[in-house]
Image (cartoon, rainbow, N blue to C red; front, side, top):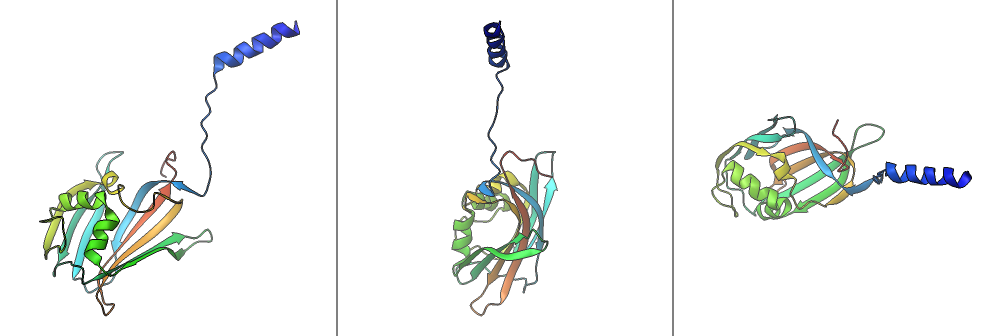
Length: 192
């Protein structure tokens, strides 16, 4: 009788075929980027941008707007990128990731990788090389999933970040400045 019950139990578990998926809860790993806000900080406005996020469909968000350069963006400028992380006690904790480079145009091109090429096409820049000539470059929209194909680290700590981009000259005057708030979430998580 016990053997019969054992076979029935084994048969039941065989038919159920419970499917488990391991989803780790580690503090870092491969991530998905959820863009939340984009805004601008104070500068001399040599390099201005007017960008915003637009929800085209329930699962497609795009970035629209324009860049206005009163001077060519070349390698005589430097770039300062600083990511602040959201603290567990509240408030932004600066210097989570810091990137400084003397060649602004070439560094931006390297930093953004394939996402940079997508932005060049979307904003209709005249050429995909440095320097970028002075002018106004308008985009009717670029899907944010195209911007995720960048050269940032592919494994990083999950959380909420505020990334500040500054374009400076040799005297440390800020000629362009922008801030993007984003969240890095696990690939299987659903954004809030």
